[in-house]
Length: 405
Length: 76
Image 1 (cartoon, chains in turn green, cyan):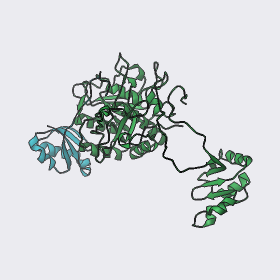
Image 2: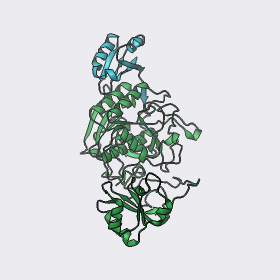
Image 3: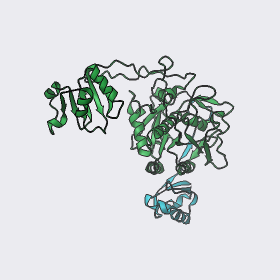
Image 4: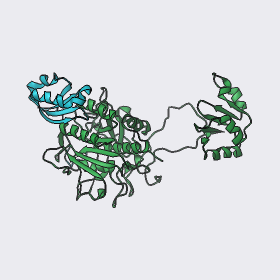
């Protein structure tokens, strides 16, 4: 758990209003919920939605009952004294009942929705702010058994934080080995797959037990082109990588057709490409930029960058208004501490390039936690992301979030 | 110029035949990628329409360059 005083918190919790009744969710295997309520909790007057035929449950009749069972949902609303509630709760430890919860009072939502105005994260001696914000610091999932490809400037194989890790390297740059001569690739591999408990300094890696495939598709000087990038994607697919992280982009407004076909074929074959939205905005000057290639392809997940307050980083590119041009999700991408070339060892830099490996690492955690691949993995990342007040054209479905217990 | 050829889904299993046809139309093929159904290489501008006409070719696109900022840049 994150201590409230050691790091930012996302919201202030309020005690919910309750009715005094309980909501019981039955296991799918429970054949006769009304009979169970009678025998386990001693409830005598149990109404069932089946009693009302195909019509809706009559609220007047339901009000007079100790319990109303909604048979199609496997749910009951129960009026129970403490002893009866206790009996139901102990049943929830067995096979019949999934949960017993207080019935909440719901209100029409007001305009004051609240949000992340109070969010503020910072690096602590234990974890970077990004690992805290994305829920990776507290996640029991590590990416163990998942292969993650990072297609970038290669990897510094001499980095001590990766001693003992399974790292497969390959260069797609003529005349250069996979050894990182820039630093960018080693930084991205650190955020996506580096350690959570390094020997020195804060933990900075999301999928800290994933198997790393470092493909060098950008040269030591930082340049590359389709030929090497596509070869790197092919290599990642042949090696069964569930997640392919690409912190690279060209500032072109057109969707580049090859990445549309590639993104779709990669999803069809059960993998997922995650790419940087781009840094071509300068919001301080009211320049919102646009999502470039390859992230603007419809089947490639585009990642924008957030700062420690979960506000959009000023350079993070906005949705390009064409099919596929969305910023799909956002990740920690401002003042990100991660691994760098030795002997420097660490560096703190900003960019959608840094947000992307956070999202890729989280994708690996979800792949491990759910077994999902391809489109299902994409879907769960969207569904589980933490919604933000920022415009969807900038942050998509919000802050990428790791699976919890 | 450097090119990326997208091979039709229907021709992915016979991608080597497509590559052979591209070679005969003047393309210098670098890589044939059967998992993705892509072929990369280079060819003179003049031969582009001939490459596009090869059976099994979905699209021929000019290669896009990518460049990172230098390592000392604060924004990457």
